[in-house]
Amino acid sequence: MTQQTAHSATAAPATLPQWLQQQAHQRAGGVALRHKHLGVWQQRSWLQAAHEVQQVASALQDRGFTKGATLAVVSRPRPEALLVALAAQWLGGVAVLLNPLDAAAEQIALLRRLQPEAIFAEGLPELERLRVGQLTPALVLYADGRGVAGQQNQHPTASTWVDYAQLAAPRQGDAVSALPLQARAERTAFAFYRYGTSGGIEEQRITHAELLQEGQRLVQTEQLGADEEALAARAFAAGGQARYLLAPWLITGFRLNFPENLGTRDNDRRELGPTLVAGTRETYGRLYELVQSRLPLPGSAQRRLVDWALTAQPGLTRRWLGEWLVRRPLRDVLGFSRTRAPLLVGEPLPEPTRAFFAALGIQVRAWPDPAQWLNPAALPVAPHPPAPATTDWHHPGAQTA
Image (cartoon, rainbow, N blue to C red; front, side, top):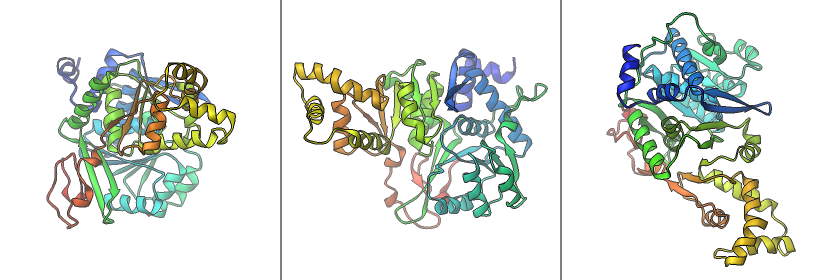
């Protein structure tokens, strides 16, 4: 047993990679991640996930990624995006999570400003942004290699391009198992960026300690356990997702599921029946609009039945019949048939959306997104503003550890 493993056995995990190690030790064969690919759910056990993170971390280190370096992740939700972020954190690096659906021009400008040492891109569309922006980080990783060879030929040669699968491939010897864990509780785990109302770039850095503190609070309040099923249907491009989905996943050891793509996420949710949903205002709003668009026409007998069943304060008969005729089928359609922890991360729901889910028996509980803890409009726009607390949005010139 290495000194690092012995320490982990006696001390509570203080970083995300340490929690991954603990889950791999306690739930080695349990399912940690599932990803739907070509209609079939593919899975990784906790032991497989931990080993893959160490494999990738070792490969990153071999390619020059060091403590304090930045890995930008431009990807939709998929296991590789999460595991490569944990690998960067293993080495004491920072993962910057970017949404590939954001405007290309703004994202390219942001990447130029950040100049990350490494970039993980989901596939060809994301790699195209590097070419357009003439970005040449030292290392470029990609998950989907379709068409990448042609793209690389058009790109400046200053970068090393590597297929993620190549980094995750098993290696000979025991170098991986002995790889020192560089993550520390007080160091930044994730950094998030956005354009503020003034047009300037704002930054938010979250330490391992802060993530785990908020994750523990949610686990205790919502009484989450290892039997939960969660669906990661949105990019992890917000601090709330990191706090209220990724950290609880590592702390409790539940199963984190990824849809095949954005187009299949609703079908995948219905098939999965998640018990934990950590959605945003946009998530619940999109589902609300989806149901509204498919309801029977106003004035029809079927619509009158729906309206009758969804009344705010139904009597006993209406509650019983409405449950079996309308509310339960609608929960099944939305994929909320087994959901016991419907969480809202970030901005509050519009009243019609909140009332609709409440009428279905889904009491959405709000957890504040870190972006709400400080009004970014109140921050100074000066080039070198005073450094605020690490939980706040601030300008990148005032970075924290």
